Image (cartoon, rainbow, N blue to C red; front, side):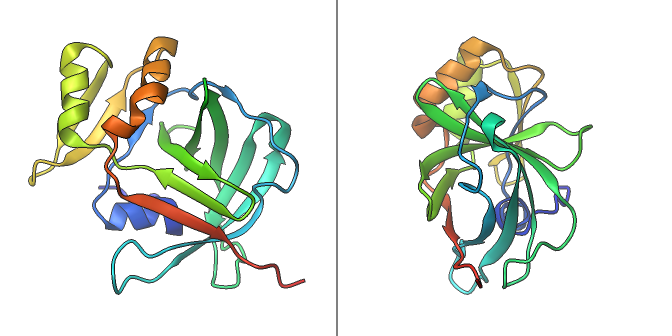
Length: 190
């Protein structure tokens, strides 16, 4: 599995052997937020006992269109380099984050389960059997590949149309495992 570069949500998930729902175009419509609402330093709760927390920094690009960059950070929340595109998107009542490390790569999808000024909770890991069944029924036109343990290795959409995005927004709780990435805003040093 390729190294993606974001310490908390992406590289941490990669180290856990996770996969992502990948798609070539942004899902849904841009979600407008106030300047500074998502920007700043964030820390991710460890995923397993004994793991270290992950740190990253989010910067506003155009919050009126839900556009940000995100990068690895040190324990003080200072950005460390490789910035990735991050877009806050809406489909019906559901918020999503689309993230990618360069324009040639597909977007990686995160479901925003909770978002406040101080805490963000993301679903990110698809469940094998429900997604496999949904694809077999024709609910989604995507390719699901499994790893040696039988878990999802990758779900790749050639395109995600509006009907598929709406279906995902309504049924995501059935399609993703219960494991979550929990992000907490770091206190500013000011």
